[in-house]
Image (cartoon, rainbow, N blue to C red):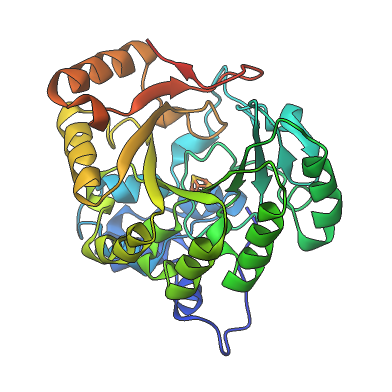
Length: 335
Ligand code: SF4
C-alpha cells in the first residue's frame, strides 16, 4: 500500500479527516481502552503492512472489546507471520491479468483500472496487500497509453475503477478520469469499487456526486461492508443524494472467520444494507493472500452458511457466494 500524504492547506474536509487517521496499533488500542492488549510484535507486523484506520471507523468499534468485529479487521495479528500452505502474494492472478500500466483485464467486456494505491483503511485480509502499487497504478502520466489500449478494444462496455481505493483521488482528478472514460464510445457503464464512504462518509461530497451525475455513463458504486456495525447514520445520510441522482449502490463483503461467519450477522448485514438502499451483491470466499490465513472460513462451512441465509432471506437480499480462481472467465459460484 502507498502511504497517503498531502499538503493540508485548502484541502477538503474529508482529506483532513484522513490525515487524522490512526496509524499505529498502540494508538488505536489506547483509544479503545485496550492498552493491555498491545504487544511490540504488533508494531513489527505493521511494518510490512501498516495499520490505518479512520476515526469514524474506530468510533464504530466497542471500547474495551478486544474481539470487536471491526477492530479484528484492521488490527495486525501475530498470526500474519505464520506459514500457510496454498496462500500467496497474488491470490487472484493480478499479475497475469495485467495488460497495461495499472490496467487489469480478467472478464469479457470489462477493464479494471488501478486508479491509486492508497486506501483510507488497511484491511488485514486485503487480497492486494502485496500488490506492487508503486509500479502498477494508472498515474496520470500513464493515461495516454492506457486509453489507447482501451479505445482499441471493441468488446469493452464497462470500466471499473479500483485500487487501492479510487475515491482517494480528489474530485478534480476523478472527474478527468471519468470524463476520459466517457469518451470511449462503446463504454456504457462505470463501476467504482470503494470502501471509503463506509470509513469516511464525508467522502460522498456534493462535488463527487455531481461529477458522477454529469457523466453520460451509468454509474454504480460498489461498497465493501463486512459487518452491520459498519453501517452508520452518517453513511445513510451521505448515500441519500447519491441515490437521488440514480446511482446504483451495491455491496460486496468478504467472509471472515470470527467476524461475520455466523448466520445472525449475515442476515442482519443483508437486511441493514437494504435499509440503507444498498443491494447485497457478492459474498466472497476470502482470497488466499499471505498473512490472512487466520481469517479463512472453510468452503464447506461457507456453503452451509449461505444455504442457511437462503432459507431466511428473500432472493433479492441474498448475495452471491463466490470465489475467484486465477484465469477463470468469471467469479465462480461456491455451491
Ligand atoms: S479498502 Fe479495499 S483495497 Fe484497501 S485495504 Fe481494504 S480491502 Fe484492500
